[in-house]
Length: 609
Ligand code: AGP
Image (cartoon, rainbow, N blue to C red):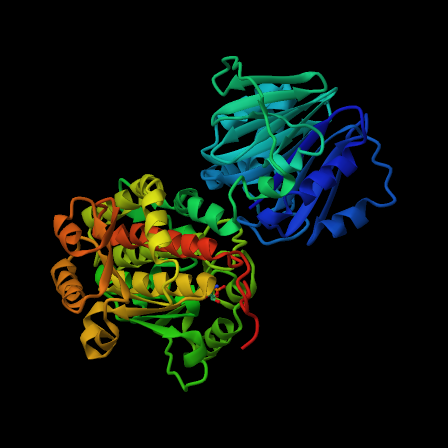
């Protein structure tokens, strides 16, 4: 996720911007840049890769200016490259941006008709040109930014500088974070508190649809509509480490709570709700291919494999195409058969997993159409595939995947709708219902996460359990697998996920009064049968922790603990039922005192076989 820093004050801006950007490195990035006003014009320096590359590019240049803006870019539109790195310059104006401009394609066409030649593939450059067009027409920078934002839809945190106005930076916010820091004779802005802590603890938090003008004397805050806003700054007393985790104890916990926002970002700009349909350009798969495929074949590892199991379910149910799901480490060492009528979807948050990459290459060599479903733009798997469908979870630091899993689920559900609509197997009305459920999902996830205290109580009760069984059916099965994986990864307890219907074929032998059994039993088509499995566990004195839908009295009667989730439509239910399981694993691990973010023996990106 991108990072923004801005500085206007008495000191040289460049080193302050670089240090601020270093504090935002945890957000992840693939290129960086800054623009500093040298008293005459804006000087622009950008570099691909780590901040050290930017520092090297700056070394030897004078850069005495005391006003500037800086950026670390985490690619969404366009690969990581110097032209795509921020700031983007258009005439007199330099812009850094965090977020996604949804209507960038139509604005780009309009600007091209006006003779604009674009230097990058980014949506941000469009904003720079819109602002510059207003500045060239005589508008002051603040008004120019306001008028440009009147044309855009989407999420943004922006910092804008103009060579014509060396004594101000204009910033704006909608849906992406932006904080203003007030110091003596200097004003700063940043995507997060740590970028500013070295200079001030007096912070002003911008709200959505606000604009601000930063000068050396302070800040003037307004709404996008032009009304003056008076808001008192807050004193921040966090330690720098706490600040990078946004006040959360671990990155994993922060990422669990970021999930509603991550889903919003993954859906943004893709949905055509009225048509019950999706935007073609967003799927890495042209409509004709989607119509012609005869099989969808998912390949993945670990948590991504669990997401792919749900993907298989949705592809069969909504697109009515035969679907298969395989562990990449298995399929690559068999002699798999792929055909030109196969769509092979390689699912990987990192986009670098060696087994998944190798299996994808095999499929492509055999003539299959390949699609990468990844979180990291331009990583190896998207580069090796014909097309890419990106999740927009932002960087995930905790080794245990959480927000990447739920955004993979959301992207797969979109993919099933996309294929289903193009093949005519999914009606407009049904497509609309599913997309509506997805649009409403982030708020349902927020309300589920607010119930964290009841999960903590269960964690406290079972923190010493050495074994735990997780059961589920239908879409509850991948969630049971994922709940078990999360627990074993970070708490080192032995946990197994099982299809509930398989219990009587073996695992039932394990059940006794010492065995906690988590039963994922939302009120869906499989409810009655899963309830039967719960009763089988109870009949053998097993201790049941049920994940059930609000209002389920039966679960309350039979289970020792019930973790309720809101009653959302079946299609999106797994994105809700997984939340208490992520929290359960987290709280048990934290109570045990394990290294939650970097569990032993595990790596975030597995580039070895
Ligand atoms: C998830 O919590 C794990 N750390 C692990 O199973 C992971 O999902 C797996 O290694 C696959 O990674 P990928 O999504 O980056 O391909």
